Structures are given as structure tokens and as C-alpha cells.
Image (cartoon, rainbow, N blue to C red):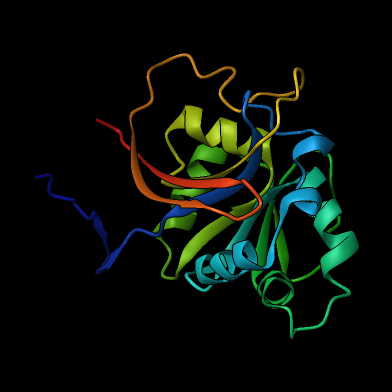
Length: 195
């Protein structure tokens, strides 16, 4: 039996940074073959809605910010994902962007580890990363990602960016949830460990 230790900072628990990605059986995270548009189902959206209810902040890279902005900022608040993305503060990790049209939003251009450590210490709910595979991989490598869900699509892509490339040290994970969807996608949620 393991005991979970919750770190306290100024009277409250540290927020978690959590992520969700669609991934092929061979680990590729940037292919049209395993895109959310192809594999998302109503039952999956219901589970995602439960996840975003536990978050109040969005963290993304510049490419994902631009892609999400093109679609979600024009959607109605009757859609839970649109309501979450349009009204949550978005932190965008970028050294090339200078203006953020889709608000509320702020740029993170400095030391990522320092900025995210500060953000996690602020009161609030989870910090959600929708997509942004390069950012997710970086946070895994830096030990900043607390939990992530992979939607494993029943397809082998063959080439493309793989999530765990550039992870140079063993990464201990604890499975906290798994769901097999009717369309064949397997959703698995892992908690990372610093031990």
C-alpha cells in the first residue's frame, strides 16, 4: 500500500498539470491517422467533460493554440469543451508569438520550469494540456507533468513524432484509469512518479 504525499504551499495543495493526447499503437502523436477528429466519440467526449470540470487553466504550445483558436473560439458555450477553452485562462509557451488574439491568454517566454512551478503554486484547479505533444514530451522530460491520458487508437502509423522520443531516463508511471471505447480506442491515464 502506497501513501500519497501532498505538498503544501502557502496553505493549499499544489495544482496538477495534466495532459491528453491521441496516439497510435506505435507511439506516433502527430498523424491524421490518429487525430481526434477521426476517433472522438460521444462517450469519449463525456469522459473528457469530466476531466475538464477538474481544470480551470489551459497550457499549450503555439501551434496548438492557433489550431484550437481557429475552431473553438467560434463554438457555443453549450459545448462543454468550447465553454472550458473559451473562458479558461490560456498560457501559451512560445518564443515566436507576440500577440494572443484568443483571450484570456498570456505568453510564457521565459524559463519554462520556473514559470510552471510558479503557476502550480497558485490556487486553482488542474492545469490542462489539450494536445501539444512537443510540450507534453518536454514536461515529461523535465518532471513537470503530473498525469496524462493517452487515447490509443487502433492504428499503426509507421512514421512521425513519437511521444517518448528524447526521454533519456526511466519514467515510472502508475496506471490510475483505463477505458475501452466502442470504437476500439483504449483510454489510459497514468500518474507520473518522481521516485
